[in-house]
Picture 1 (cartoon, rainbow, N blue to C red):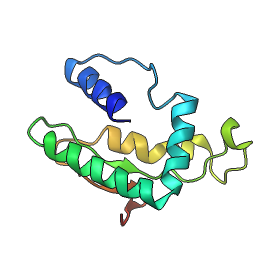
Picture 2: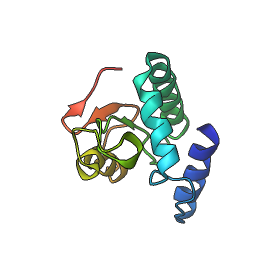
Picture 3: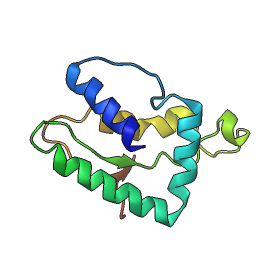
Length: 115
């Protein structure tokens, strides 16, 4: 996860975009969904989110985590209660936050969540 995150940051900083293993990658998304269910992983996600936010505070890059909810996808046999579009709302919102936006937080589409 750390390697992929740093690669994404390099691409963001350089102004390039590539989707190799990015958020649209089904395997990465599936692993992420499973990881978010475990309390230990949430703690690790919190720690790495806060650490990256601190490291990048002077760059203008915001680092946040999001909870898209259980989305109906091929990975779960379409058993989720939300559509992928509904789940993407918070990720897109956080990805497009301006310089005054939050950093080091955990959010769903309704706002901040407790870690």
